Length: 442
Image 1 (tube, one colour):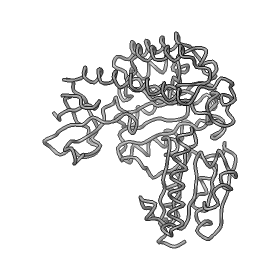
Image 2 (spheres, rainbow, N blue to C red):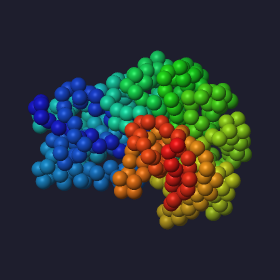
Image 3 (cartoon, helix red, strand yellow):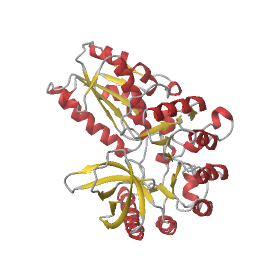
Image 4 (cartoon, rainbow, N blue to C red):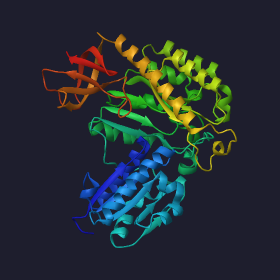
C-alpha cells in the first residue's frame, strides 16, 4: 500500500450505520491509510449505504452514480460499497454495478483494511458472511463533534414488523455485554465526550437475549456513575418502557428527560397488521404516565402513513391522536413497500399519492403545534451546548437537552462573548422565527 493512498468514507442513514463507519475508520487508520473529507480528493471512496426504505435506497444509488462518474473521469480510482444496501442485495447488487470494485457485507467490517488492500491491488472483492457475526466491538474514530457520541448497545432486531426489512439485513437482535458497553462508554468519557446517546434498533430490549431480562435500567445506572453530562435514549419501544425504566430516567439527573418512542400508528387494527403491540388506549396510558412521572419530558415519535389497508377514518384517528398527545418532536414516513416483507404482499395497498398526502398533512399539523409550543417557551432559560456560529446570520447555534443531535434542529442565539464549540451555556429564549427558537446568552 502506498503511504499516499487517500480514503474518503461517506456514511448514509442512521446513527447505527455511523458507528459501523467509525469502527471501519479506525481499522483503516491502523493500516496507515490517510483520510480526506471529499470523495473527489480520494483515491478510494467507501460508500456506507442505508437500505431501509425506498428513499434511503434512492439516496444511496444517487451517491453511487456520482462516484461512478468520478471514477470514469479518472478523479477517483476505486469504489467500495458497504452497509445495509450491499448486505440486502448482495451479489445482485454487485452484478448490477460492475464499476464497483468492492461489495462488502456487514459481517466483514473487521477485515475492511485487508479488503481495501486487495481492491487497491486490482482485485474485485464481493464478500459476505453471517449477519450475526457482525462485530460491534473495537476502537472507533468518532465522526461526530467531540462533545457527543453514539453508544450502540445492540444490533439486529427480533420485532419483525411486517413493513420492515431490518431483520433480513441485520439479523437477530444481539446485545453487547454490559462489560463491553461500559468499557466503550469509559473510553468515550475519557476522550472528552459529554453527551452519550444510546442506540440500537430497539434500545429497550437491551440484555434480554444475554441475561434473560430487560437490562437497560441497570445499564443506565452504571453509565450515570461516569462523568457524562447528558445521557440520551433513542429508539425505545412502547411496550418495553417499564415502570423501572421510567423510575431510572426520572431519578437520574444525568439522563436527559427525552425519549424517542417509534409508535408508527395508533389504530389497533393497523398496529396488529404491522405486527406491533398495543393500541390507542395503551399508548395514551403510556404517554400520560410518562408526562405525569417525568414532568417536562420531551417525547419524540415517528408515524407511518398509508400502511396497507389504512382507511380515511383510521388516518383521521391518527391525526387526532397526534393532536391530542402533542408530541414535542415527530417524524413521519409515507409507507414504503419493501421486497420480501409481509406487508408488501398485503392486497390492500394504498395509492402512493395518498400516502404522501397524508404524510404532508401530519407534518403541517405538527409544524403548527411546534410553533405554538415554542412561543409558549418565550422568556424561559435553557442550557445549551454550543455547536457553532453561522456567520451569514450572525448567530451562534446549539442544542438544549430537549433537542437530539442531527434530527431535532437547533436553537439560535446572540452572545457578546465568544463561546467555544462544546461549551454549555445558559440562554434566554426571546422569540420564534420560522419555527426556530431564538435566544440571547446570559
